Length: 134
Image (cartoon, rainbow, N blue to C red; front, top):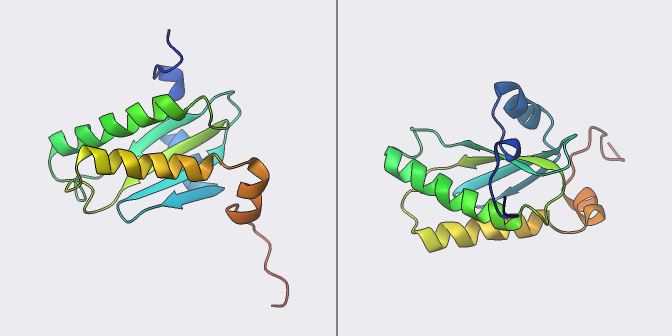
């Protein structure tokens, strides 16, 4: 298989896998129409899952178009991404964007998450500790 394929092993399939990302979100990146959540996994590759609600994107053809564009972008970036589980959540207004706008938006979100790990930990990692001084 090609390096840019989207194998079954690169997908989040089970509800428990999605729940783990939602409950233990370590990194997040967002735009007005997309939210990208990530948490480390035990696999040796990045994995992707979608939450595109009918309430936010009414037509199935639009939900499928958005998923197709994001999957294509993920295939091109997955080799540079750390071993993380990603969940992409669609927000209202996403269906009104054209393909190029969606692609540019998701590429920018991948770029933010591809920064060196120490930058992500310093800037984006959630901590259970309270800030000092409180």
